[in-house]
Image (cartoon, rainbow, N blue to C red; front, side):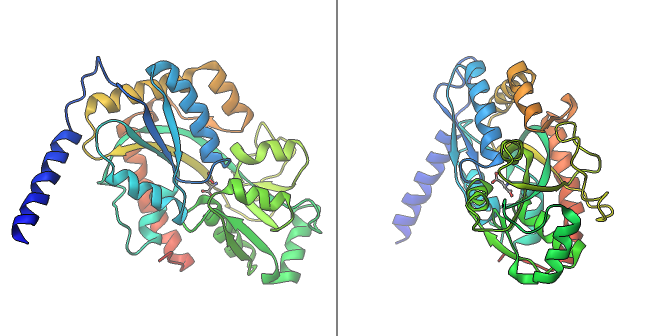
Length: 327
Ligand code: ASP
């Protein structure tokens, strides 16, 4: 048994050596790069990843392959990335869920603050509270009346405990005092399909997914979650101006790699990300979807690492007050 153990340990250390073989800047990337998305295809995180992936493929002259690994509010994908070979060929795009998971999951199999290399922040995205087309409430005041009358008969879709759609739902429930029933999906792509099919009543989701449905009048729009109204939806009041004083949720996004990923790879991938965010086509697309590209100083490893630490500290008491663990 001991002999086998030694053999396995020797293989593991060899694998470790191979995995962290130095990346030579002039040849990296020598093969396609995987960009892990923690939610199902068709949702806002997936939309952003595919727009950036296509632009970065051109700059890196190598395919950036989007891989959807959904489940558990994004923690399945983060855990997978933390354990992936740190060879410069696996990256993760994730949002506030990276900061909320430590407070939500008592047995989180990774530490967001120590198990990753940080590439940089990407975009900030507002959220919108939308409802199925035939929901009997034409605006937010009528929705409040409906929620008070119907209580837990009203359901709200989300992308799993730890997803921002779930967090928005929890904050909404607290703010209006409504006992909404929440319904989890593998991402808010499938959740939006359920809204369009009339299977669920409400969804709080990023404009990077909801904008086309709002513009085509396929859903009811009750408000935006930002402190100020959006330039892309100027006639839509914020939830704060409609009585939910101080209600504010913005979805920020970061790019991560497994701890130990060579600096050359982080730098080259990060430079391609910055170039993508400066690409006029990408900038136009992000604008159309209500997304705000973060300033250059935030598009850096330090910019993301500092922000993540601050947000993790900020969310801890908020999640504790909500009194809901995911495991
Ligand atoms: N909007 C989802 C969430 O609530 C993420 C996604 O499906 O892209 O986190």
